[in-house]
Image (cartoon, rainbow, N blue to C red; front, side):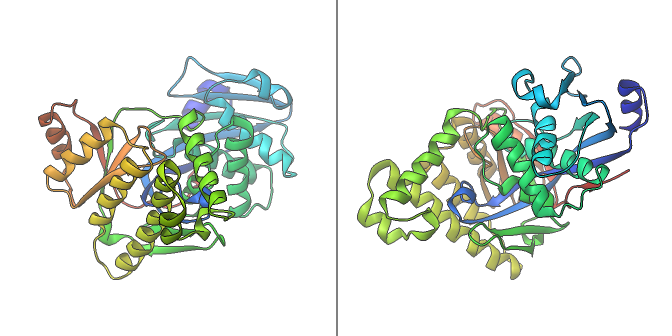
Length: 363
């Protein structure tokens, strides 16, 4: 990364920082409903080499898109900047709004987290940049402040209506553990993840974008369901109340969220006891597919193929509408590709991962 930075920026970087991607063991679309989630940081990451500059320019390069360098000024970036570099400059914009003094910087990005695969590639990018800029600016930012800046960059600058699950997952993770998050009171606990490891992550090849309409529509439907139940957020509701007072689409969306909270709680109890959680993943996938309607035929095929290959559990992970499938109890990722091919679908790319640590400086 330092050599790449020298070639592109013409000087040495001040350092290199890294942030992991993440998968959710369980807990999809629960964060913005004040619910529970259980993410794990994966052993794929985004690295950034950074050096500040005093002239107000933000020069950004990505090794994945060498033909798309960016050169912008922060005050003009909202109107002029497009693509991946908006996430980088968005972090600077959010940090400056919080009082961090930043003039400009050169930033070189490299990543092994597939974009649009439901593995929080955008959170990995914003977290790596936020940790780097906060340190270089000498700002005493704790992890909660970094989470807020990364979320503001995505929601306020880029325009992706996400919650804070992804940011917390990559900024608060610890090796070998899942992060048990309660979005009602902000609590976090590291739970041993050994009973669920290793994980196989299977990329369906279907790309999603949280700025598109499907994600925002589901969020609005959850808000409508809560309002119809007389609640501020769905976390305050019960399945009995949903059955009595809601029908159709709103009832289905609420059932998924409340059921997912229950599955997270049960998974935490099992992991603490060293027990497996594969069947909970199966239940979660059916809920995402049928009640939340966030799956796709390709993900359903991968889930079926994984179970046929001997997995203990499999489900779509991430916001949905494409992305990746998470598989437990199947150490050979090649078996998923073979089984997917046998079902008449293109073989899916897969990798095996443990539970990684949080974003930080690496050089």
